[in-house]
Image 1 (cartoon, rainbow, N blue to C red):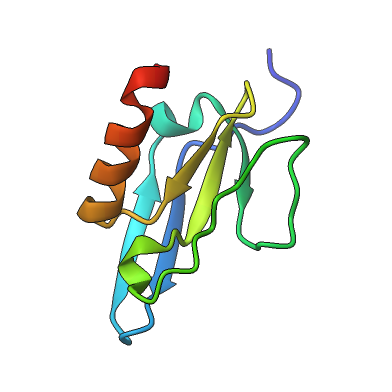
Image 2 (cartoon, rainbow, N blue to C red):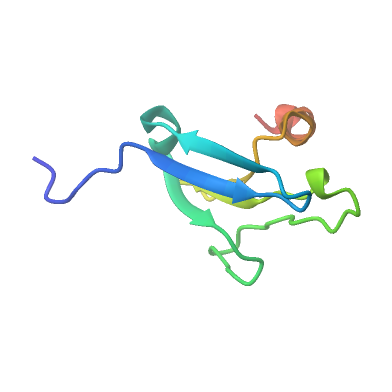
Length: 94
C-alpha cells in the first residue's frame, strides 16, 4: 500500500499573450512517468536542458516543461504547431 497520495489528474488554466485562455489536463497516463513540472525559466532540474525559446511568435514558445523520470524535458503548451515541431525534432532520439 502506498503511504502517500497519488496524483491522478492535473488541470492548468493558461492565459496566452493574445488574451485567449485554454484549459489543459494531464491525465493519469501522462502523469505516470512525470517527475516535475517546470513553470519558470529560473528553475533548474538536474542537468536537464530546457529550451524556452525567445521567438517573436509567441506560439513557438513553450508555456512549461514536463520532466520525466529519466530527466527528459518535453515542452508543454498544447499548441498543435509546437507539439508537431517538437515531435518531428525528437523522433530520431526515441
